[in-house]
Image (cartoon, rainbow, N blue to C red; front, top):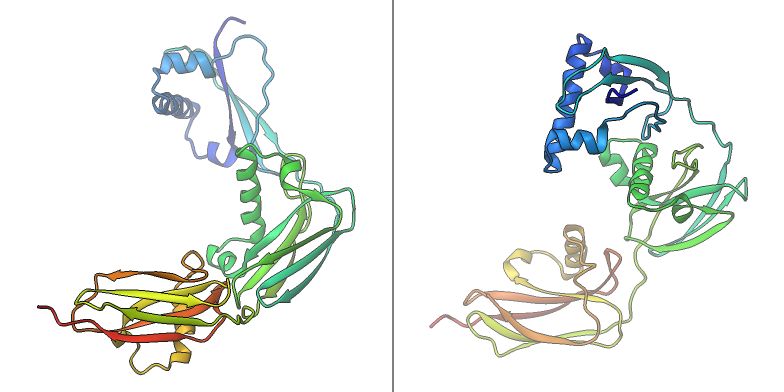
Length: 319
C-alpha cells in the first residue's frame, strides 16, 4: 500500500508495437521526463506532484476514441524513475456511440449574397450543433465533414465552452451575409453530453449569387502630380462600401474597363480594404514618367456592386 506507482492508458495497437514490457516502461519514463522538462521541473518533482499514486485510487481516463481497444498500464515507479514492480496491463474497450435517431429538416433560401436558413429537428428537446462552412474548404482538407466538425467541437470544449454554450434546441432561424458566387454547406447534428457526434450529419448545399447592385456614384480626381507622388480624392453619393486602388496602366493594357473589377475580385479579397463616403490623401512611391490608373468600384461580399470609375494620370519626369 505504500509503494508509489503510476497508471497510464495506451491504445492496444500502439502497445503491440513494443517488443516487451521493459521497452514499454522505458517509453513511459521517457514521456514523463519530456513533460517534466516542458514544465521546467526536475523529474523527481514532476513525478511526486503529478504522477505517483499510493494505495487505492479511483481514476477517470478521458479523451479516448470510441469503439476502440486499450490497455490500462499499472507499474510501481520510484520518484527517481526506477521500476519497482512488474508492469500490469488490463485490457478494456470503449463502447460505440448510441445514435440519437434525431433527423433534421433544413430549408434554405438566398437573396444575392445573403443565405437564410430554417432548421427543424425531429426532436424539439434534443441539443444540436449547426452552422455553415465553405464547400471548397472541406474538399481541400481531404477529410470528412464529420471529422472536421468533431475536431471543432473538441477544440471549443477545450477552450472552456460548454455543451449548452455551443448547441441549441428546437427550431432555429438565421441569416448569413456570405461571399458572392460561392458554394456553402449548412449542417446540423446532435452531440452527447461530452461533445461526441451521435447522429447523422445532415447537410444541405447552397450557392450565393452576385451582390446586390449599388446606386453609389463614385468620382475620382488626381492633382498635384509629381515624379513619385500625387494627391487624390474620391467622392461617393451613398454609404455603400467601395474599393480604391492605383496601379500602373501597363498592367491593364488591352483589357476592357468592364472586365477589371471581376479580375481584381478573383485575385484579391477586399473585404477589409473597403471605404465609405469621401476619402482623400497622397499617393507615394510612384515611378517617374509612368502612366497610372486610379480606379474605384463598389464592392461587397467578394463581388463588384458598381461599374469601374477610372482616372488616368502620368507622373512627372524626375529632375
